[in-house]
Image 1 (cartoon, rainbow, N blue to C red):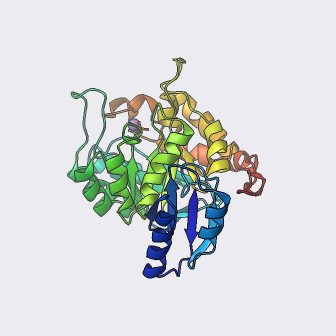
Image 2 (image 1 turned 90 degrees about the horizontal axis):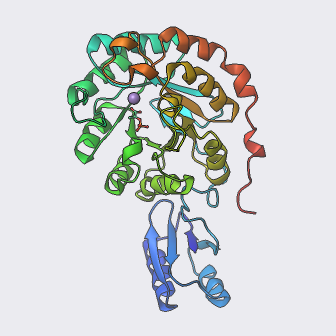
Image 3 (image 1 turned 180 degrees about the horizontal axis):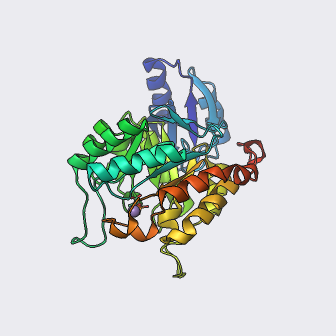
Length: 343
Ligand code: PEP
Ligand code: MN
């Protein structure tokens, strides 16, 4: 159950609503932005609901809400737009995030950044902290990598996004980048998600490789509940019995997210397939299903990439993809035909 307060509700009004709900024998919890009170535990009677609805400062009482109220369309029927260094995701324009899996050197990052900008990409990606399966694999350049990425983005005129692995790297990513990425392996790192919620930079929440859509939206809820409304989701494939691709790219999840949530969702066909030849077709499919953008790994010399070279496409392939995307975007379901908000 959820109690929605007016944004003008005074501290005294909030406190007295909380006290009154407690007096009714219920257990309320205040979530600051937007001002709502969640009530867990036993459900309220009709008389209790009516009493709460009449309190000063209360606009609405919702008996049935999804477990992720802030991410859901129940309180926010319009689709959210998230600004990343001047680029808006969720406006209806398809946004291309592209760049190397990992920042390897200044020369590599600047070469790829220029190629991404020339191809028509909008946001430069590049990992400085790499969560590698083997502790002996290249782990990223750390703080030096972030500085190189920021400089390459500046040089190419592109905002930048990079992954934070823990709370220490989060501070640096938030300082040097326009967007903070939470990777698949950290989607259930609730301390990290909460810390991202206290940052002012937008957050890209990648789907956990074994997470349901509900668990993924609950991860976003952790960020939103701490007061950061700027969350973009990223479908990057899940683990299934199918072994012809690195992961199974779940494009139907885009439709599900758009039906349940106001948050924008992009697709990562690079980690979703793990194979260069499948990246462009799946990026086209992501556009056709209505994703708000794609995130693609690009390398000018993939055979010598320090990570994920086999799934990196060449800059010319990125340029081709972007040139031909308009036809795919045309096929996407119109936002107004998506499931309506609570009726
Ligand atoms: C990445 O985008 O660099 C990455 C490591 O992806 P994921 O967290 O989806 O595996
Ligand atoms: Mn990668």
